Image 1 (cartoon, rainbow, N blue to C red):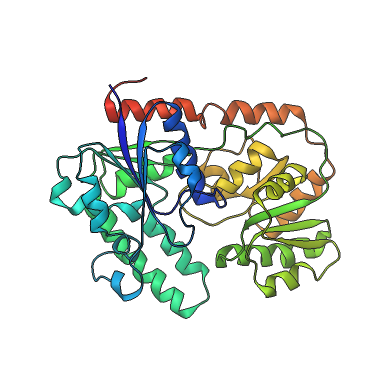
Image 2: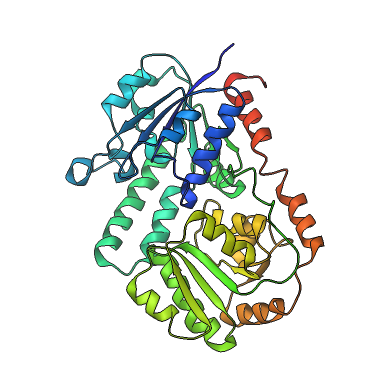
Length: 379
């Protein structure tokens, strides 16, 4: 029997040029490879139509988001209200195929009685209300603080209200599964690892790299704050080469990165350039305080780079302490970086990582699990 699946994507899932798109795109690719007929619905706010998606989807529909005052609601989070779209709902009602909603952002139809009898699945990218709480704490902008605080409060109520309305939820981390079960009393949630490129890991090599690397979206306030901390509190003392790479750094950050002769900035590298930098770095340094979800940056470094250092919360949360180094304070980071920079990255560490990661982030295996959950069978 031919299997059809509607997928509602919070954004256009191509090009794959930031962490949030990896799971979206590579899941579509894997489902197509498994023989699933995909009907993709995506909200476009800048990417435009992408012909690449036609290779993997039977149909692709693009929708505009409601923006500004049109999406302000006293009960709905902005990320949800801005994607409430009647044209989308009309298209979905033309058949009875299962529906996969990518992110809390796309879940308004869970409140619509017209979809009450449909199979409905939600891919959780993180616990959204905690994520917005984290953004609230990280930003210094007064107006952004107001927005993030309000959005976090609305999301907390909204996530609780829909926790029993979907056929099932699929979380990207075991921690998010436990949180939804204990905090929202969700009984229909399962763990589904993120989808990653099949070719990751092919260029990982033993030996010595040339520099330390921090990479990420530098336009995000929390990432800029982390970079400033690294430049001032860590590398200001140890004076080892550090490359900062990522999207849209502020002028302030660029000046700070080029202030010392042993640090530099690579602004807006191509995906190929970024992957090359990750592979050639001796140490990928990726501290974060994001309380939920999964770090694509860290996974990228573990698959494709040499030594990796993250902070304690992330290392423990993902159970990666055996395959990356963990530090918390500036002093711990300085000590680890100084020690690892002298060492040759061993082939035994590559094998340990492969053993740990390959079975978890197995696109083909995880796709068969989706097929079993949705259609009650495997291909």
